[in-house]
Image 1 (cartoon, rainbow, N blue to C red):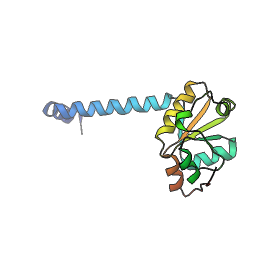
Image 2 (image 1 turned 90 degrees about the vertical axis):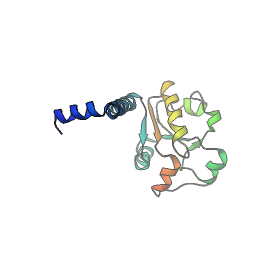
Image 3 (image 1 turned 90 degrees about the horizontal axis):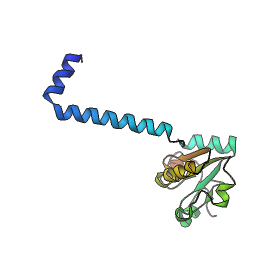
Image 4 (image 1 turned 45 degrees about the vertical axis):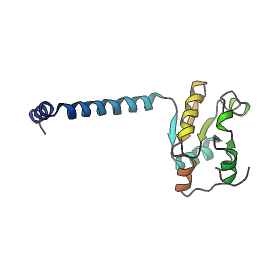
Length: 144
């Protein structure tokens, strides 16, 4: 497609052209925001490496009943309603890598943002949550 064809398309379909420009700008803004947000999404394989290599603290925001049904080995359970970056467990780990997980990855992204805002240096969240962990055929531990 050359420039003249692009101009012809834009003049014959102004709404589609505006939609294309709008979507392109939205994608660019979203990606720039993702790069500068200060915390990173991890895939399950990356999380296992971080746990084994850097002794990361894994904080599970699942409800207690869900946590007992299955959680990542070594993870600590904090209910979302009690999640506070100044919590004793978290405050002691400000210099360590902290990974926040939940059932599907939604609550953990918001919690990661709060940790970063509170001054934590190495903040991560498990993209897809415990569900992604299970899809990767990684083990869960039952009980507390």
